[in-house]
Amino acid sequence: MPTLEDILYRSGDVFLPKQVRTFLETYLIGNPTSTFYVSVWSLVHMLSGVLIAQFVTSSYKTGFWMHTAWEYWQIFIGMTKYKTLRGALDVVTDTVFFMGGMLLFSRVYR
Image (cartoon, rainbow, N blue to C red; front, top):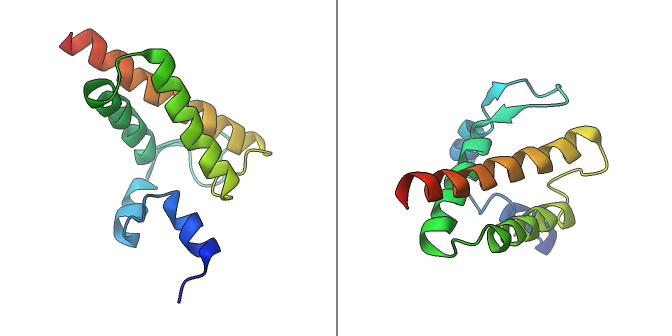
């Protein structure tokens, strides 16, 4: 039986199956030990920016705060180690990709 801590931690990857998580953790730039990296997860952040812009809000400010809340949730549950340079860069990179997705949607489809 999973503990509450396990359930909260798994919420950080939206309860995705292991095979999907493994694919999303594929590095496109960098590797597991590099300080800066881009993975398939980065593309998911961009896609989520597009989806938020399409179905939730077209306000960059609101989108930014929604994404920031998500990143804080991942820090709170221990999924993102923000006290390390790698963790801090991960948060920044995820935010840049998310906001890029919102911008891409607004420029291409509006």
